[in-house]
Image 1 (cartoon, rainbow, N blue to C red):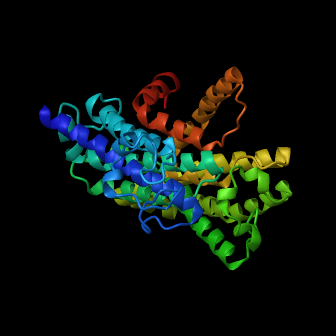
Image 2: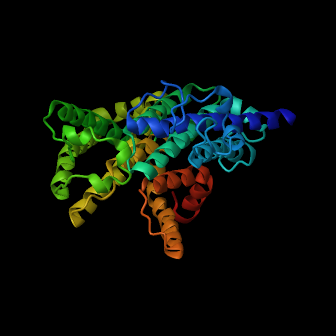
Image 3: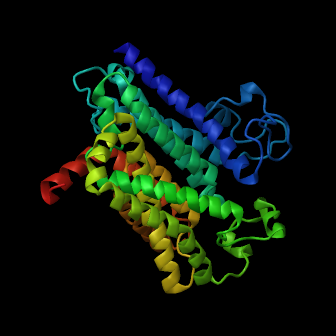
Length: 392
């Protein structure tokens, strides 16, 4: 049992180290600075931080939140991000392997046996999503933007994880990842939609399809440090006109999904298609793609219809990519459910604002993260409710 506790402490410590790196990501990525060079330095005096002053959690406390050279305050955000990340790493490990809130299919074994017996891959993918979404939320709170690189990274991890799970020793890991082995229509829509997306991206990069909310070179060169609230310095747009460009972008995706669905239902193709998606790697990969498509679709539809209705940009494209990335990890059904859970967290924030009269608006990204997080942790309980009361 002592080994279990030592391992748990290591998980917490590792999470704190990841949080330290996330602080670098949060500050540098939206400002288009390198994540590896130069070494970390005091934001006020630019003095490089010595290695013994860069110990996660402890250094901030020992230094009392001040630079040892210029004595300027160091934002509490650095400590908070490290603490939250450590809590995420340790807390999710406890939920999965100690308390069994999420069944990893290896009941009866010790937590470490479950982890190293195949649960490590699911845990690793989940923690990648959680850590990256924490960084994205912090950036969104400060600058009202979500760097798309973070979403693309999570999407890639989700795709690779869903395919690689089929090679992990022990079949228990398979059911934890998106899968379309029994959903030929979903698989067809995912494949056709992906082909259509590739066509749309080619059209975008060649100039055949115009991007929405396109900024000129002067606007793109503005220092992001001066943009604390994106709306303050944004140029004027006809929002309905801009969102029509996005509809044009989505046309090949919709057509591709429809054509693929029709083709795979042809008598001469149907049986072969069903056999094809039964390959574990194909099933996992298409399941992850289906989740990506569903996550993007539910947010993008809200954005488009909301913008057309009110002639004001409804939700950001960063939110579209964020939920697409979440869907690649948790699957189509669950990402849609997470999207509809997110407003409840928004209501809690609105109540807090009303009670304390803060009246500060915040972006929607953090609420989406909370919705995804709730689905991950309470997955089994939610599934039982859906099965018992709604039959699915």
